[in-house]
Image 1 (tube, rainbow, N blue to C red):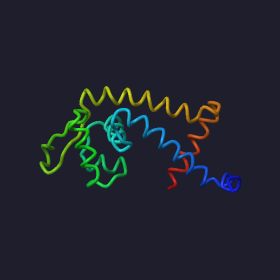
Image 2 (image 1 turned 30 degrees about the vertical axis):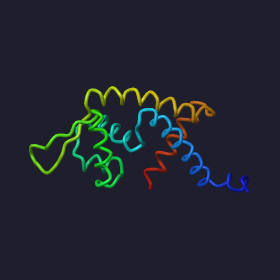
Image 3 (image 1 turned 135 degrees about the horizontal axis):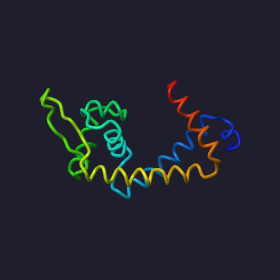
Length: 140
């Protein structure tokens, strides 16, 4: 039966995705973080300060669920939360210096996790795989 499953692209993607999530979650757990925490840090690191609603959109999480994620990052001193002077109903989030430092460390660790996952592929194959996955993701 495993042989039959391995012949379907969907199964292989699901299996590899699950393995990737486990590895990422293990690495992030060493820092008492979840993938959602990492996504918020990465979003702020890439986009800069942003409204909490925008961060929710960037990471693909319902705004109500983003609150708890941001609360933990704020309590740990990794994210600053400020009232938007143009609209006092909104919060602007930004990385603190501690958040920037941790994000830099996590990026290195994330690269290590990815390199381990892709160790069986030559660099050209890694590049091709990334291109194909990005192309596929853009169609969904």
